[in-house]
Image (cartoon, rainbow, N blue to C red):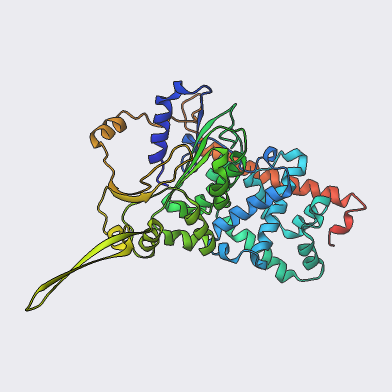
Length: 431
């Protein structure tokens, strides 16, 4: 979330232990703020989309990240319409010229063309004809206002992602997202920005959803998905990943401030599934419902209580037992820095007797300081300097942005000519 704090740790631990790997992993970074320190990766690479449902998943993820309130309105007409339209555009770019232009920036630019141009082009392909029939019915039936509303609900949120730097990173592929591929293992760090989290979070959510689909398979290397400040992105399929990925040797580590953040951004049902399926929990000081939920998770234990009654004649003592919280909410809400509560899970052949803990995690601050002092910075990945020593980053990033816009204009022009010259398709063009 606060790039490059965690990425620096990952990079330096990798170079320290590189010799221990049989196949040495490559280190990759996705950073929209600084193209110099970012690799380029196309999250909708055509080679990794085998069905139109893959395009739908990508459109779904990006739209729900841009409109967090839609998470709890899934299935509604004005939620599904823009998702289906954008999915159709992604799949069209996948089948057009063998996916040569199938990138996220090209999809945004195509969406922003006139709908009088978009719909004839898309419906001229049999794979998309039925998929887009509701839009065509509205168009041919004269329901222009309804159609414009549907298109605007896709255009408006996606227009926030029109950025030369974002286009640069997402328009080419220097690596693939199958990070646990035994032949090409990778360490991938993706950086968000607190000032632009609504925009970057949507793009990163798309990367995450594609990664999850590619890594959760048999026969791959052990891997881990580590996400700090989880509520800043909508991670489609997270609940399923936690529930099923363990058998495929994928560990999931999630960091966030409070359960209420998860409920707010993921909806009550999905948040509960995430909370209840994780096996290990580590928590510092939290209050309110989160403290109560954790206390209930840790369970109750039989505890002795002694009461003393004093009157004029004598003193009586009574001892009774009752079930009380093992770690009460008041204790969790009053934890000091360094103190943690939590529970861990075990395996058949690795039993843990004491699963629940309340302890201080001791950190050797001196050793950590020495280690971080010796850290090497993440190197410059792309050098934009020309032969004369001039920095041409802005110029090259801007040229890439303009190239994508011009390519989409040319695609639309060529496709409309093709339709006009085909007697079987010419009827799609309204006079």
